Image 1: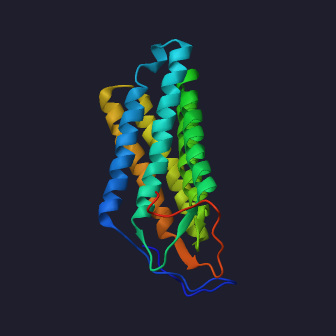
Image 2 (image 1 turned 90 degrees about the vertical axis):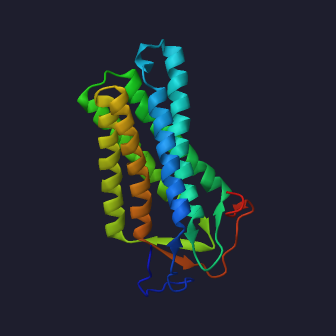
Length: 224
């Protein structure tokens, strides 16, 4: 839960009190888990495929994993309860999804088209972590009518957590490509995505924008 600190700024009200719907919090974790399970199991054995089929598997897994990060975020945001309505810019929301998919895809390319050395696995995990982080904050930047404000300590902690948990999850899933390691990597992926989101939200205050002008394509919670 984000709480206000009493600060005010130009064009901003006092920070809003917010809460989360526990059912949608649980649903957001379920989405992250299902995306991780599907994407990581789909790529099992991909190294044995010819380059063409392997690229298709990697592309599909990137959409599933990156799309899962995006879906988890916005289901969690559906559970965000504030005393005023808020919206999202459609273009920024789309860009946030593409960022998640493209960065996860880059990580998968490292894992499936390069020698799977410790350096490559670590690099892929860092790319995954960057994708989770970038997707979250780009998605948040699309908020309209309410503006998020971030505490520097929260930004630093969220960044460190994202890189650490995502790298650990990729190491578990790709250190040995057994069913058990992939299942444990799935749990690690889901924990990384969910933990980063809610830690970031804990370090975020929300302010009502005075005289906010909604973009032509503004998405409300009903559309999402």
